[in-house]
Image (tube, rainbow, N blue to C red):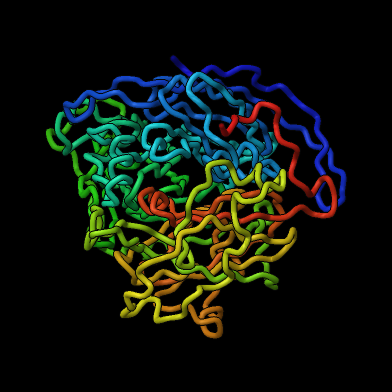
Length: 567
């Protein structure tokens, strides 16, 4: 069943309030219907049933323009509850439709439906949507294409055509059974069996050569590739044989163009890439390989698609394959990511907070929880865990947002610390005393309008690695990164406060730090977590609550009438 889209281009004249000013704003309303159900798919000569949207993997693409609004009716015809998150969409004053399970809503039960109101504001470019319940996002995800507002255009030459490319993972087994088993035993989840580009593993994977995704291009034309990393647990290198590519946007925000032979993209991130078909007419492999800087288990395979020029020629027996960095090549990853700068033009300005009123320092760690009689499946018979500020997050049985909005007691604590409870050589020879976190359901309250700086400090506890941290409800500026321990005196001297990238997901370097800044101008309950799914499952999460401002227009909207129940 294809996506049902109704009522496109219904023009609404709305009134938006910004800092007390009444502005008139026209936007279009779009309607989509998502039917969630089990569907059979065959990859790697293995057939299995997968939980998908509209029987598609990846799912349907949402098409809107900057500032539009979409109503997506999600019908759950599956066997268990699920929610959907609109990754990177800020949802002004509307956390009710943000989606993380038991954070802003309880799951949509089997046989039930819920309509999300997705409010787009300043985003322009490529984002994505995905399930936010357990590991369901492995099979429930799709792209969001946000075109420039009417009367405006791209800050680069108009491409001849556009193509969404989604990187994902294929598991031969049932993904829910896989994570349920890992949760029960406390061990590491089984890695995936292949990566995929637009649902196809491609060469060199088993039974995949004839089904590779193919991108047809005309010689001399320029194309806009909208790349989404929906991979569960690995960062990825990406490139196209014999072709340079130019990255022009990240996380639906324009950047200064970067021409390169490869990129590195973390789970959760999106990039807009220009490709010019300027080589001899032939076939060329498009490929993605993992970047993994940890000793943990991971999928070491590659995935590919084929760039296929139009015209008359003899196809090569063996198309050229791109030369991508080695799986552990940290320098190659850094050489790309450190080049990213906001476009910072008159049409696309930046507004980086210069004077900070709230600083939060957060350690990011992989931990263990002791098990009686060493009975669990992790190291030394312990349970694998993860933490922020040495607190491993425990998800409540009802959602944070309703508890906060209705002032219900006993659901969560409001004392997530502003700094690590223990100070030690975070990236050095750590002691075992920091290996075992406390377990809690805590939130950090932030006053409306605060200029916030968050310092993410990686640690050498457990299996240290790069952590892609994602904050719901905001785009933020990545003002600095570095290796070793963050120093409040010397590290800020390296910050970029002129044109830092404005993003929603950032990589905290292995045994290093990353600093973000934003203004807390979106009241609501917002999840913050690592986008490596196994780390999020282990507790590398917390909740930021931005309190209401002084007016109705700076306060959380009332809840919708049909919120899923928590019973």
